[in-house]
Each structure stands twice: as structure tokens, then as C-alpha cells.
Length: 253
Image (cartoon, rainbow, N blue to C red; front, side, top):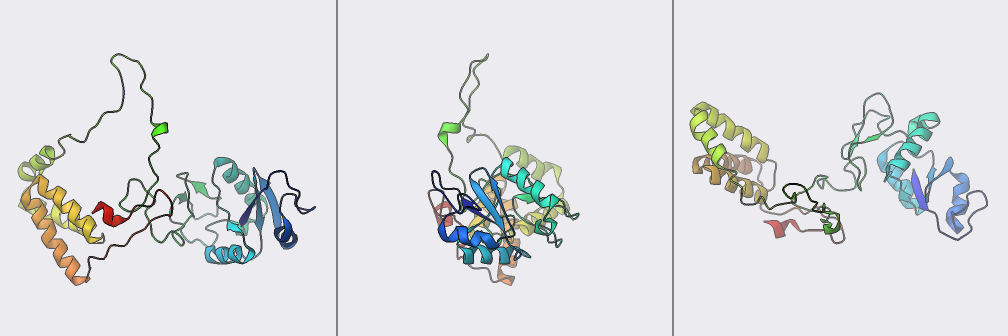
């Protein structure tokens, strides 16, 4: 499925108003054309996989259609549910990873988080979809910060950067856990970190050392073993989107 923006104040193909010139001629051969808001959504039989849909859109000079708001999502789901069940994401029981929630019963796609992106990682190259992250993320928009309002006393945001995040963990590590439990904790921590890039491992180990040197050193020792076995190097893999929100991972090391 692809989308074509509707040009304002222009006349398009008589069968599909708003689709201009060559795109309007191509629209004749599409399986269907539906308008939602300021977009036309077109479909063609070549939609058996996500990769083939990307290829088809590229050949047609169109953009892959991914619902960007609740209106588009609900209208397109309703249309697919009534006519084009084969166009549903997950029709082949392939799990869609990313910002979407699907089930194994061929039900329409349901968003779990509104935002840019496709329902799997085939285009975004493995970049994280959560915020904050170490690679790229949406920029904070100061104009959307909640305004202060009068209560008793005043309520507003405050800087929590100076909170004590270590004493309670130190007590747990030194006074609650026994030696065997401490070792299991370190093994679990290292196991969770071994797939991360080295600069992220280093950052977390420093946090653990701030709790207790023994904690950080044990985890680092286990990571050294994992990293040697997998020949992990110091190369930084950067996942960033173009534009103002692109932040190189090396700048956060």
C-alpha cells in the first residue's frame, strides 16, 4: 500500500481527483484507491511481503503508506477488514516488530505507540524505537512542557539529577544478598549487557562501581570474557535519523 499527498487547489486524474499527471495515469491499474484526509492510499497485488511493498513503491515513485494518526489507522483497518484481508500485516504469521502490536489470528494491526516508523526493522536498520536512547531520538520540544499552575503549594517540574540512586542498592548488595546471590546478580547483569556496544557497557559498569567497586569489577570481568569470545571491538555503530534529531553515538560516550 502506498500514499500520494493530495495537492491543494489542483485538478488531477478524472477518476482519482488530486493524483497528478503520470501518477494519475498509473492509478488506473491499482487495485483500489481510497482517500483518507489529505492522502490517497493505493494498493496493488504485489503486497505479499513488506520488502516487496517497499520495492513496488520505489518503482512507482510513491511512498510506503504507514498510518500516522488514529483516523488513518481506523479507516484503513476497516477497509482491509471488509475487502482485502490478504493485505493485513501479519497475514503470514510473521511477527511484526517495532511500534505495533499484532496477534496470530489475522486481526487488523493495532498501534501501541504513535510515532514515525514501519511495523518492523527492515528500514530503520535496528535503530531503537524508545526514548531516551544512545543513538537518535525525538528532540525535546520546550513549548510542550507542562505549565506551572497554582495549588497549595506550587507544583512544577524539578531537577532530580542530584538524587541518591546508590545507597539503597549498596545496602541490598552488601547486607541482603549472600555471596552466591551476589554472583548470580553479576552474571545476570553481564548477560544482559553482553550484546550492548562497548561504550554502553562501560557506562553501565561505571554506574555499578558507584554502588560498590566489587559489583562493577565482577560484572566487568564477566563482560571481558564475553567480549573476547565474541571478538567485540570498539567500533561505534550509529543509528540516526536525518535532521535535527540525529545524534551521533560517539557524542554520548
